Image 1: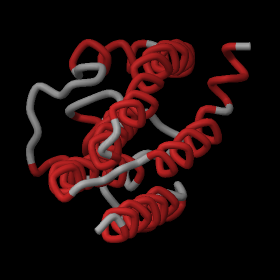
Image 2: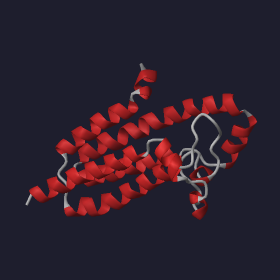
Image 3: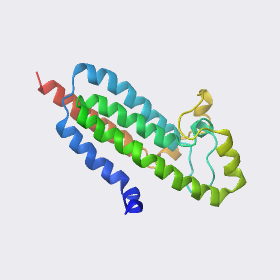
Image 4: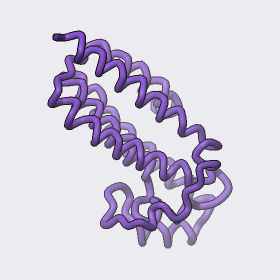
Length: 177
């Protein structure tokens, strides 16, 4: 059951997001705080997606030089940003709590697979790079990014989702006057 939930986490995330958009009561303040935070999460995801070549090599450059899981870090920051934008504590909890529950388990599972696949190379990477929260970040996070890889990994979908959800929240805010 848990494995099935992990595989369906993206679909489940969209269902939760639609529910949160429905119950959202955005304010000028919630949007002003949440949008920049969500943009940071989206940018983190974008940098990671423009770097990783899933299944063909161990990603160690770009944002992966600072955190082993920049996609999940970006998704978590993005969820927090949208939670704040929603202006609704229940909505925020619906976005943030699943990340706190699902991502650690997914990370453990994925790291076990990476350990099997890459052995000592992954062990060295794991020993030198934090799992989730980076110790530092530099402009080197941009080094390995290519727009072609960003597109190949389908990350434009997150950008489209961000724009659509932000648009819905903005409309809800302006209609509340």
